View 1 (cartoon, one colour):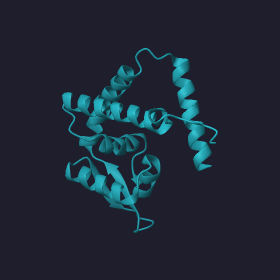
View 2 (tube, helix red, strand yellow):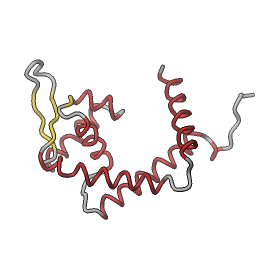
View 3 (cartoon, helix red, strand yellow):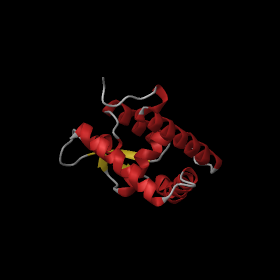
Length: 147
């Protein structure tokens, strides 16, 4: 018999997915209500570029845990929206560096504020030590499966 027996609805992955999907839906709704016309996936790219501009497409893959075709599609759509520019590396022409535009930089403060407000809403009634416990457990699960 398996060491851990769970009912279908108690699987960690199911519970985690339910929470992530609820947060993503609420964040998307809050973005729309604030007049921010980007998807959560696009926002995740912009978020990493706000932290460190001019990342390569591979670096964005690594930071967002997405595959190359997904990143390419997201960057293409962000380019069409005028939020990023793709520039060839001067050192290695096979690499593209993704740069924020002024339009994207204007979105930074408001979108991060909306994201923080959404997380505050999601964490109502949850003590800081409970949040730390969940973060630690999920980090250990990730480390166990990727290390």
